[in-house]
Image (cartoon, rainbow, N blue to C red; front, side, top):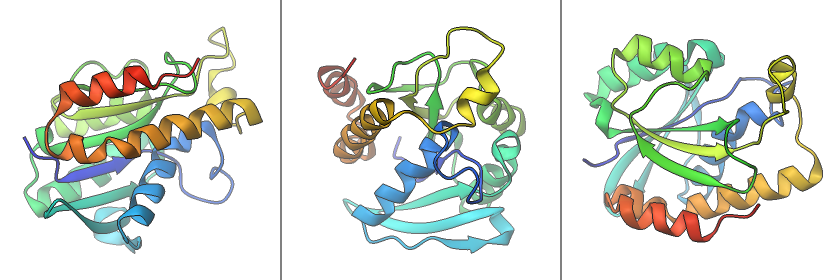
Length: 193
């Protein structure tokens, strides 16, 4: 497996830019900056796209503009165009069940209630893609979850989330090289609670 497509999940527009639900976009923006990528709107992919080069591997970066709950349409369109298999896709998203400051990577699994993943699994008809889960924490009960994810984190939470994003950027080359055991161990060592 070699990652050929990295997707940051989020919602488009200024109103959502700093919300917890947009950490996938934050990651892709930082990765594009690190590797001299320049996002451009691509209507045929229903998103903003740039190509970067990591260790001589061409990687497509995608930020869907379909809104979170319809992310699968964007992911499917670019994956089909570039003939990218599900196991060559890394989706970066916010994770309620992980504390801020923690990032974890895994392959497959359920959507865990995340509507962006739920739609992606439905559209791609598989769970066999990789996920980089950036912890945003949980509000404590189910009722305010929508308000929680569609809101700006506190300064303390933001610092921790940013740290998890930075740690994730530091291991992206190992992700591309398929050194996932090393990535898992490295991210565990850098957890901030």
